[in-house]
Length: 525
Image 1 (spheres, rainbow, N blue to C red):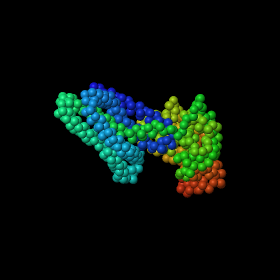
Image 2 (spheres, one colour):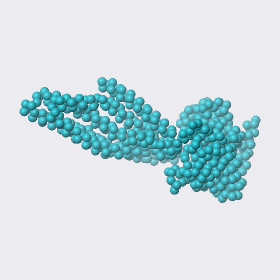
Image 3 (tube, one colour):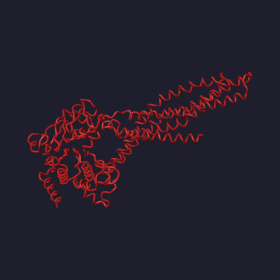
Image 4 (spheres, rainbow, N blue to C red):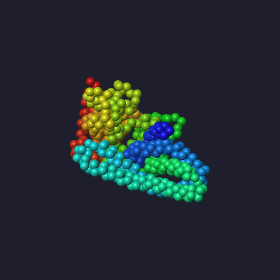
């Protein structure tokens, strides 16, 4: 029976853990950027792995013992009271001796296990940070420093776990103490009953057998109790994720209407990551963009350029004001329909394990080989892809580790072009390519996506000089809007950036145009 019970308990626990992980992962997919920022990536990884494993182990223990232990306990109690009700009061007296320490242990251990799981989050964060930045670690010879940081995080986990286990470990000695006290009391009172000829020796032996059965079931209960104490912190963290309401909610609509065009309008938009006005990073921003326009955005580091464009596909929601796409508030669109109309190339290039072709088809799963090749030519990626022995079937490592920064950027641009969006957002996405290649990419996009609204965030004025209009962002507000020539006359910030780049030889007045013309002639041939 024990083997069968153990097998069914294990199968049930595995199914429970699988379903729980699915629910957690599905919930995370619905999170906005703000929700993910709240928990942190490392914490979510811990909750999906270690916390679920703790819950699984507790579930398995409960399923395995929830039938046998109560059955043993109840049947033994009934038989003991049937045989001698007065002597059975020994068991009743033991109940508070067991219950009170259990409650005290739970109250003391639970917060300590919460601290332990938070330290696990920190440990995972340290490992994740190190693996992502391993090249920088080796380049700056900081291995010893990273080992020290990891050791500190690992020691914090160990110390927190030791503090928690010191409390939980008291459970078993207390149970054994109560068991021996009950046995001594039973022998004392039973012996007196035998001496006074009110009880037979065989009855006392039977009674001791029932006592062992009762205490064995209580030992099982105590093991379940220990597992519950350990997993209570994990279960609370899991429930915290499941109960989290997505910051960006999908509207209830009869049909998923897509934006009719790529026009964009911001009306008095303010935004704050913590939803408080005093910490707003965008302040009362208003502007409009016609469908098909090419807009350049220039601004200093930390001026909230990226935050501004992330409001367009509702990766974040505004604190106040409204964002309109295609003449309609973005909050009125079905999220999937809205985001299908917007393609973003983020500052951080994100590629996945698989072939180059698989990564490109993220933009359009139905894309033909001809469409993929055309998009890659526009993004100046085709030549370097074909230089690989397997071409478009080349396997990429996690995050595209076997590609250079410029190659990853061009693949991400090609992936966005395959989407054929109404709005294309390039967030500093050509920073790792030379100015000539940058110019060729922009020229290619102008020819292949004439009806698409293009927003180009850049540090180099060369990348936005030929845009229809340029927005200058300063400390979360619009400092100026105009063409390159107009801003040179009217905007001091823009002029200062332009002059500093000229002095640094980062700006070449005719280089980009010449490169673009050369590329156009090459394509014509």
